[in-house]
Length: 205
Image (cartoon, rainbow, N blue to C red; front, top):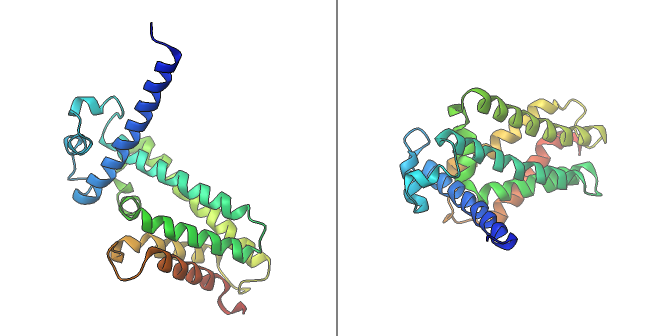
């Protein structure tokens, strides 16, 4: 008879293995590009037979969608944390800018996929990811709007333009950042947080 403890342990192992598959896919997609990578590549990276991989995924596209969904979950957590701070709006924006920049830098391979590979998704998955991206942008625009409403930004600030500019800067990190570069991630994240805030406050100070 299979005990409850054994069932729970199997469930835990499967969940952990699902994360292994996701991380392996990130490494493979980053190295080869989504279009050139195969399920066989991911299976070899995980260390399982190709057929075994389908216990955890439906397809290669399913893997790509999961990378986006998992990443978006982290972004939303950072937005929630910043929004919940008992600070001035500009400091909440700075907190998000710093934590988001640092997360991007610590997960630069995943971010490179997030920024460039989403167009390979189709149908329902693509619609869902577009919705996720729009929600993310809307939440950041809300933080920026609060800074403007508090009188801490230039009166003529266009919140949408500022939002797009900030996302462009963050999404551009994979183009130049290298883990073995001269500057640590903490220093870059601090600098990006300052630049994000300066973009929004403009000539208000």
